[in-house]
Image (cartoon, rainbow, N blue to C red; front, side, top):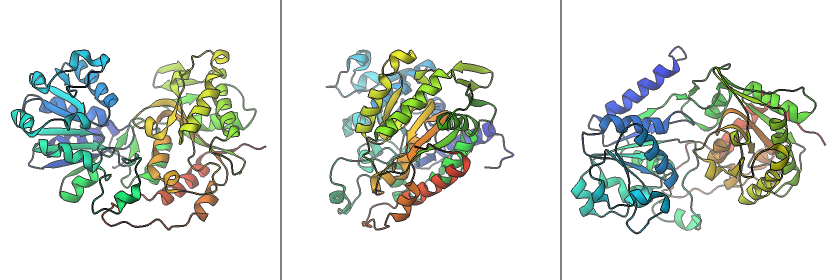
Amino acid sequence: MSQKVPPAAAHDAAVARVIAHLESDARATLVNSPPGAGKSTLVRTVTQHFVGTDGPVPIITQTNDQADDHVRALRNLGLRTGRFHAVKIRPPRHDDNNVDLRRLQDCDVIVAPAAKWATLNAREIREWSPQLGIIDEAYQMSSAALASVGDFHDRLLLVGDPGQLSPFTTADRRLLQASSTWPLDTAAHTILTWHPRSPRVELPVTWRLPAPTAELVATAFYQQQFHSGISADQRRLHSLGTIHDAYDQAIHAAAQHSICLLELPDEHVAHTDPDMTTAIATLITRLLTRRAVLIDGNQRQPLTARNIAVGVVHTTQRDRIAHAIDALAGTLGFNPGDIVVDTANRLQGREFGVVIALHPLSGRRDATEFHIEAGRLCVLTSRHNTACIVVSRAGVQRQLDDYPHNRPVWLNAPMQPVDGWTANRTFLKRLQRLAHVSLRN
């Protein structure tokens, strides 16, 4: 994207290309979106454009929460929006929408996760005959899930973030990788494999990440570069108070650069590192007691616990850190649970003002495929719209240098577009040059 093109104009041009492709004879159109580029807004814009042309527009999400978000937003736009559930599933919070698909035919839009759409049979689909189907978060959808719903429509729009975590399974991946197909390939990659001429559109602007983070994340984790639509003075963290130690330095550096690395001394520890828990709790205490302020244009609001999240890798880390943070609630004046602490998988798709991200390789002796996956670190460091502090033990660079490149190559398994080892090295080197603070013993 040319820097001379205003971000809003570049984004609008990309959306116009998407609609033009959908109005052509293209069977599938793929939209690649960086974090915070407006995937959900694009889905709703396209939905509004095609409502009334081919009957109800189906939106296929990956989770119930994603479906609920679309339903609320589309209803606020004045569209008659139905929430389809499998007939036998009746969650109490959706009693008014637990209906058979035939009772939703008068809706403008019908929203449901892929698993719910997969409960339909061919006869039910023929009665409806939807022309355009919209798949949200196409890089979180597996090829197996795509096979259940892909033939329902004449045309598909697939929208997703290629830098996020891929579909996963708790089964033995070696058994799947040894098979002749790869059911955990993403829906987006499957479409490009079988329909290689499908048009692709890159959303060129992130409206979430400030410029320094956007450049860092784009360079490390994405094939196609993108830029921030947020100017340096438009959105920032104003951190009050003088600098007394490394914790204050890290907060001020994150306020200045939108992202900072705080390194604890190099040591091999269990992944429930008690010193790391203490460091994260201390950062949160400083952020809340120094009365930091979130500035967005002309708006200023105090940083509260609900604006903060902590991203981790393992559930054991989540439980230990959440317990330590909740113990501060009474002293710091927030309720237990106000500060979200969760794994990268569960933080995917969410957004917060300030994020403290625990580096996946912190304190480890090795660099396993799970911990080195590019999408995991990408998710953890792209959830913030103002500032992020990455906390880690020193020595990660040595781990990466010592990590052997001996991952097996499996027939028919897709090659990852971004190599995790390279992405981690690039990210760490650039972040150390941008904003790096060491916490001494």
